[in-house]
Length: 55
Image (tube, rainbow, N blue to C red):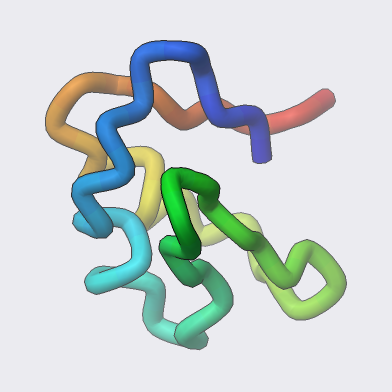
């Protein structure tokens, strides 16, 4: 997952992740990419489009 510079660390993405793989820690998003199933729920939940998939 790529977090863009304008992420406000609001936690919306963490709150909707069905596998609880995202945590907000001191103005940083921590992803557990090994367990991610690419459901895009976090990307769709971001109110400012600050997340995108990594190629």
